[in-house]
Length: 515
Image (cartoon, rainbow, N blue to C red; front, side):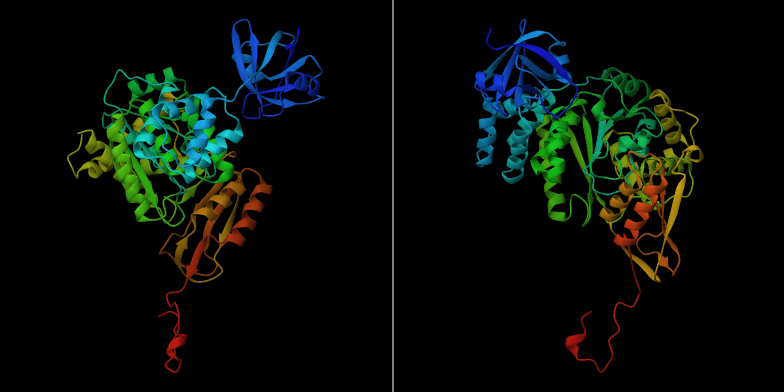
């Protein structure tokens, strides 16, 4: 019978649902590469993109990715029907946005649903992202996009209320403050079920740091139980099926190095809405090498996030924070986990960690009514000094399957290390965030948990020739050498003398470039 094929399961994952047809069968069906077909079996159906191969499949066979095979319960040798099908209407809506036209709520929902159902190809997903980058959505469209992303995934409903959450837009390395903010807020009696991301292009994400101490891949039921029992979680967002469209979008954003404004807003707010957040604090690191480089963009995000929060039922506060250099001194999963523990243990750490963590936590404590207006930061500091924040972090670690007896001394960092020494004297005038990230990744972070660096001289610190500027750590000697060479090339810590230029009395005014 024409259109009847034997299943051949294939263990590859191109990131989209694909079927392989022999060119002879493809021609007979009247389809070509990237056309769509429906695979039908006893009332079940799968829509997939066509690729052709005369080596993987013979005439009369259809190759199905194992992931897709599980979706409709296919096994090797099963008989199915394969029939051509048309392009989803959502592709036309993407083209509409490419022209700069406003999309209706129904059109936006159709696009997001087709993403999640794997009905859009990577080419079509990329077109959507680029369209959003060039032709930005208005606030009404962003609201509809937010809710569509929520509705196509799981929504966690807590019996305990209210729910608090916070998020950093990112771009500032060393930002391990989640490991302080969550236990501070939970120790004050508020509930904060924090989900966070792994690194995409950064040195490490919060989930990579927390994974050094505990399991971060929690199911929805585990996350709910731990948050309600302990008061907080620090879990990987990819472990729960909240706003699943976001991961698909990130996959095509990454190689393009673009982060559309409207998509940033919808992605962040969808995840907060999916965990039923009532109160949400947004951290916007501001600096020349962060994602938000100027005050105008910071103010725009502030205004629009607060407005979007009102439309989706979340009370939003915003903190614009200093992002001109890394937070703390450590960059890399284990190094940052160790530094966070040191801060909670009362050991000497960079003041920026305590300053930022208690400032952010203090805002949430004020929003929750457990600290007076203007008194949140002092309350947060008190919870650290009394050891209550450390105790709460260890409760969270234990609830997530980690060792509650962990201390900063027990955290294992890279066994290989090397110092980067100063070639000149003066002071550290600038630290380059992007260079630190490149060096940390060359050392093996985030995959190698012990890899990364510790910075010894931050902005304003005096430096002499031969002083250690930073120490690079690695789990593998070869990667350490690669990172050391890159550090010599990039020179992420800029050293200047206090005298910027010497101007002699006999020099023409036109040569006084410093003036």
